[in-house]
Image (cartoon, rainbow, N blue to C red; front, side, top):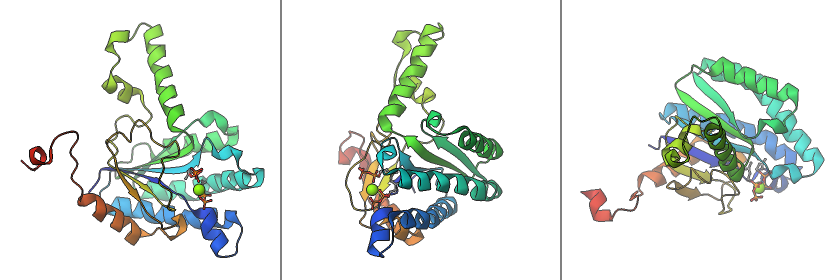
Length: 236
Ligand code: IPE
Ligand code: IPE
Ligand code: MG
């Protein structure tokens, strides 16, 4: 079982179109798949689940669609925070929060505060997130520590970078799933993907249920992760 799974939840628009509906209908339907993924992760002892909900590039979509996505984010924070807390799930929003209005930021902070002591699952929601932003953001934190005299340039290494990253203290990313058929990372977890196993499925996000998640995990369990070693070394 992977300890940390990330998912690029893609295909909402095409799912809606295939049903003769407008794109935003697909985003709304996708919320149910988020619930299923969280439930699967909890039942199977996955430690961290990181979901790509809104990329830094998604602001360039039509204003109406962006508006619906923000409303949906607001709505889900309202309706789910208490349930997540009851289920012992710790919620963390990763991404550039400065892009959101004050009301939404307050709601995010409140939900994070409410759930911060929970330990069954860490649910990271990537919103206004970009992998390059994440790397630059961590670099800024390193630079600040150097400027304040807390850190020497020569002491900057991968482990120090990890400590200051938004996913610090969480398991290394084991499995990255992308639904919707595209085979690209779309500026998701660039640093963290270094040795993640990649799994691409044609299934559109609103159709991605617990069985589909199980298929991805089954596929993962058959892989040999070599981390640069030979297969023989790993078997031994
Ligand atoms: C993913 O589904 C959800 C977001 C990016 C917010 P899309 O909206 O990208 O759906 P497709 O790829 O157009 O089908
Ligand atoms: C990636 O999906 C972002 C999210 C799932 C939130 P996109 O649909 O935006 O990715 P591209 O543009 O097809 O690469
Ligand atoms: Mg898409």
